Length: 457
Image 1: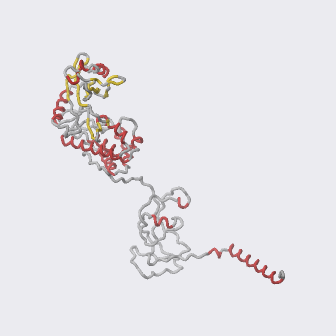
Image 2: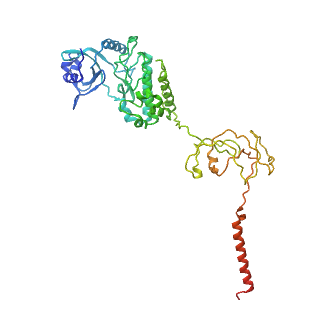
Image 3: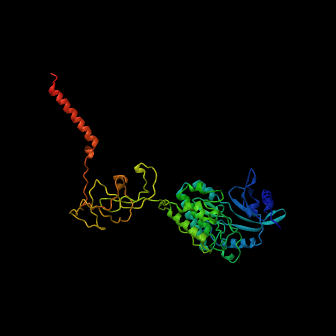
């Protein structure tokens, strides 16, 4: 027989004394209502209602099932037995549960239910929406979540459906897990997996039912929290719907075309980049033996990654022959007034400056000298020499003169042999200037001659 529908349950739970005949606590409680009826959360397999004690001091969450499963009763008995051996005070992720195979009466027949304390905590999506601009809070929750998943692995337990709807964040930023329908405990070894889990958190290749089945969805959650801690803008930029954190099923099916994975791979947080690479490896892995989560670095050193761009040949320091400092970014022709970035040109021998005398070429590793080296004859052009390895330009050499005004020399001189070129004012030798000077001298001579021949007195 098919179990009751959501509407049937909503009508029945409004009368706790009638629908909970075997539970005195629930029978004496009050159903929490809103304008539409009982407060509920529904899923694929069931719905959840909220009840409070008569004095309002205690609150419970009751899950009723809308789908039938022959193995549900046996599974929950083994899960409850395994969790009963744990101490909730030590296992703070745990919410104690009670399973009643005939706990709720609807339509004259009894149906199973699960009861647990109602936790005053925020669902993960609501919490992230509020704290997405607080990197320290996001990293603290990511660290606690990683510790919870690691602790469950030590116990041989797996949740089975890690996703935003089953994670609560309580003060002070502690992670708690709810909805244990798909949980694995050692007593269930060898049985079939009851459900696959949320599509936006599971690997496309099915993972076997066992203690390692939480590793991929846990990595998705950890990566999303740390990625937001490094760049809060990803929350509005990458989320296509409200049924995920940052990643979804389409990202896992086509990782090469995923904008979200590409953005996380370029994160300024090196740990986010590492986890992204690990997630991509998990997607390619043909087996279920995925590695556990890495510990969270609470205070990472952010190192932004910029996409590779073409760089032009750097200018070298003509004083020492050494590379001129560290890279300062791609070189453009804006200094020459072009305003547009040019394609990088291969490093070649520059044309000699006619204003300067030819210089001798140094050895690859010149020794310090106190006497100037021999100077080549004026009629001989300097021989081309192989250029040293290309190195970036420093800020001091970049500001000394624009790259277009000071050509790169074939080789650098040591400081002991460098000579400052003599700059001559050659404008006096230009034809136009000489003509003007001649005219001025001629006029001055005429005036003097007139003054001497016919003086004004």
